View: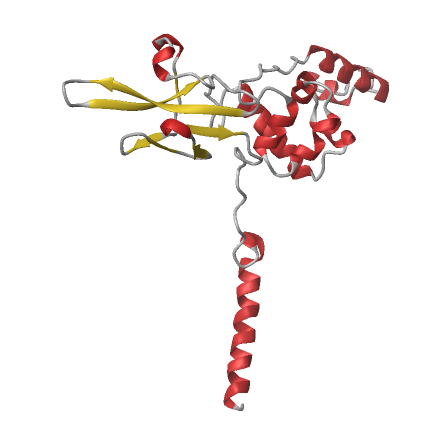
Length: 232
């Protein structure tokens, strides 16, 4: 009696594999192809308030201004990978993550205060009050950005740049972040270190990871001090 033949599926499983093994050189070649096919990162255009690398690193804060000399061009700052930033000496790792996060925001047009300013000269922008009559008594007041030395009336309506985040208090007082009073009821905004910075939270009782441990040890110490005070 002839032995029964193995099922075809089981035979395929027992058959020695003839596939070419993946070697380290082939993996490196695949990595090169993947790198070549990767889409280049978009380099956004500067804006009036942030025209160069140093200003960008200044406004996002966290001490990143100290690394400005490591980026020869605007394009370089927006093109380098996290690994390349590490090689340049941008440390610690959280500083690199913070920079990469702000680069992406800038690409998406998500700016901080003053990101919609149109007229900026030497890092300073002038804000003035625009009055729009809505009747014999009612007037709307808006904060607009005008070139230095110009009056609101001298600027065509289409060239007036309304600024978000600022309000008119009273008749002609401009209020908003980093707005300082100037002549003739105007206000000025000047590039300031950290004006776009994401403030880090204050750790309470050692933060989330150590909070239970810190509070337990504190309770033990407080109970011990209470017993000693009572003479136990």
